[in-house]
Length: 322
Image (cartoon, rainbow, N blue to C red):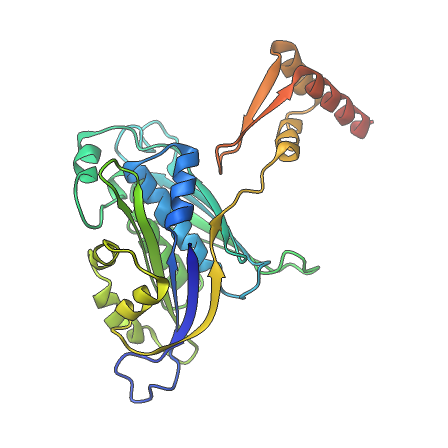
């Protein structure tokens, strides 16, 4: 079962081991990443990109410990490789939508295409680079809704330029620069021999007030390079990931959240999307085909609206306008 573990820990080698210096979070996300990739029909490096994004979303939606918290990420990336985003002016990247109740959904803006480099990398072991396909040019925008039920505006939004073309490193850059909280974020997805998702997980460490980023230096060293991917070669629990990152230093668990892939789309949402075309265009669609298909970008679910349903919708839109 996928789960996120929240804990606090002292600084490594601290003279005051009882004084918390950082919040540490670890997540095992194998099941939800497998489910999302199955729905989108993706494998290989595309599965790694989406899996790292989904894992990061689970870790980042933890500021308030409220199930009402929501985080959305819109990453627009440009690569020089054809088909990966940028060659024809259309961005690549990903969309992410995560909630404080542990549910998450996401999608790639476009596939990576095929290239000899991609085929070579997918046969390699360890941490595989995404920057040749995502690209190092572009920006990501993070929107946080801290309480969706609040009457006052509780939204925060920040945008940063890409610095690495790697999902976790660019989101770490966002945390450090836009939210200005010294942070360390590492997410990983391992592939099996067929390019499917074998395991997925991640770690987020952030300093508590009164501590600077130096307390994260030993953790950054432990998690450098292929450390996390090597750790995930065997099945792990979130506590195992934390123990590795902290060098077996003690930590205090303060919460645990089950994680799952979930999309809130449905027939009503599909109808609302078509309604955005306006009454005349909806009527035109009804005259062109027996049924119109609407596909959810986040989960791949398909919904069919019949010509009769479209004509009924067009009539409702005209009534609202009159």
